[in-house]
Image 1 (cartoon, rainbow, N blue to C red):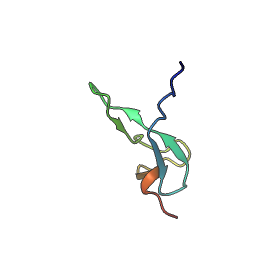
Image 2 (cartoon, rainbow, N blue to C red; image 1 turned 135 degrees about the horizontal axis):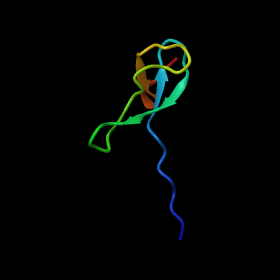
Image 3 (cartoon, rainbow, N blue to C red; image 1 turned 180 degrees about the vertical axis):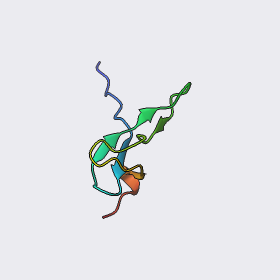
Image 4 (cartoon, rainbow, N blue to C red; image 1 turned 120 degrees about the vertical axis):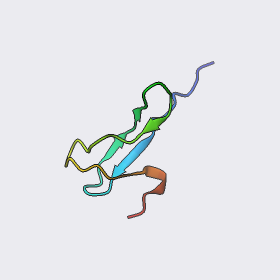
Amino acid sequence: MSHQPRLPERYVCTDCLVVSAGRRGEGDDQRRPPESCGACGASAFVEIEQFHE
């Protein structure tokens, strides 16, 4: 029986709308948004489930 891999937490940059995977927090398994967007350098993100255009 195979298992389903867990999807990473996904975050949307509020400036350029690029989707990024969350990063693991130090010392725990909680995911956090990236420190900055790899495309535009902004630091404002929302969880993909909370994103509305």
